[in-house]
Image 1 (tube, rainbow, N blue to C red):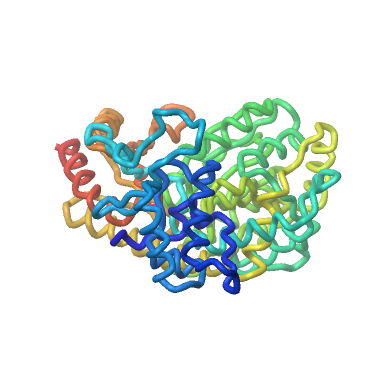
Image 2 (cartoon, rainbow, N blue to C red; image 1 turned 120 degrees about the horizontal axis):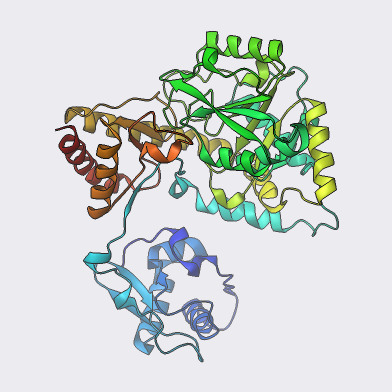
Length: 472
């Protein structure tokens, strides 16, 4: 029998199939007719994998006898084929399709083209999304009437959901913060570019952690901002080494990217004091602050200093980049300036992803996903750390997020490990790409969210071997 294919892995379960239980035709015949029609018009294509009879029966709320009989009929007609140990596949493309359409037997890559195992930092655990909740949220979002005009600030329901999210999952001290202080954004780098264009004078200097998030560097440079490096250590931004004369400081205090430190309370206070004394803005990138596994997260900086902190968040690390949405939490003078900028250039955040997040939050699916995500990534982090340290490989970074850092002796060793990893089927992330200037830190930002657990456990001995070779 075919494997029990999850709902999200088959396009069949995305189709609307109407079975009339009081009709004259048996349910199995109705189902076979519906699947045959879907293949004929191209809704199902040659090479599409079908769910197991058990999974399909659950989905349609019918007995497995019905789905098994329908599959048997279609198999006899040549519409589908079973492959031992793999599943059931559609064999026939719709009329008029190319004759060289992909057939089931060529879906598996040859060994020389095996899929690469992704161990990159900054990638979410998208496989952990509850696909039923995901589809439900998109369907509910689509029930809303099309918009006639853009909403430059974003949907009020979305901004309210963001405030609730920050209260529950990021320790936001509400105080005077309301949905009026929130703008929907297209993500962190988009928000940073808007902030620079709307608030900072062209040619101003902005300090960014080095190493740090290079898309933020790119967004600021594109807005005509001069970027200056601000060094980090294992506890995050070194506040006393931030250059003077800057208009803003961009940092990731909850989980420094990519080194992985958490900015301690005394440095947070020192950073805020310098910002107030010297007239800075602090741009707080809270890209994965929800993902903490040892203690409760420190409250966001915006709670401590709403007068000088602009808080940026995103759904791309806790859910998926598919939504394309984030948020900016800031004082009214900042949000007003950004909205005016959006009006001037006729741009604003797309609404579809906002509506999906609202639905995920409304039904509790966002909270459930975050709890599942924290549990899974905490376990994966333990696997990574235990496996590598048992092999004598050093690892550092707070118990948070979706990556750790594996130090290497120099840039040459780092590049060698990355290159040799690629030859072994691993996509590794060297620290060089996270520097804007000369490289200061060498090693791997080892991500553990994008791959499966089995892939991770198989890859770790290879990583350990490559790193030991470079140390030697």
